[in-house]
Image (cartoon, rainbow, N blue to C red; front, side, top):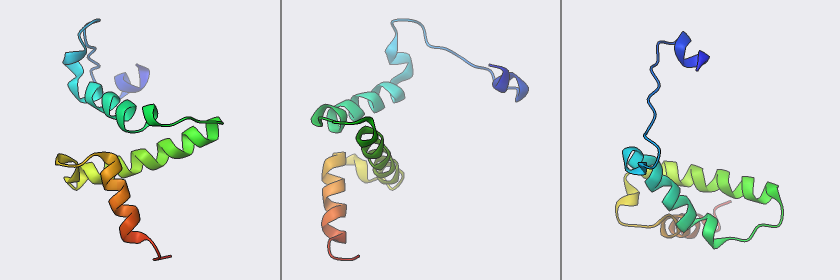
Length: 88
């Protein structure tokens, strides 16, 4: 809160029990669970961190480019991997 105060940023909170007031975060959380987290079993925390970083990078990149409209993250990632196979 101190950081926001110093920058004249007003923080607004959603009401408890009203997740629809923060639809962007709710959709993102549902996407993370459905497309990534719920489909993997992890042995160590480093594996989770590495995969999370890669997933987030791809998700952000594809969202910025408008590719998410008709494809799941896994479809986009598989397409990317296929197109870059053998190009090292």
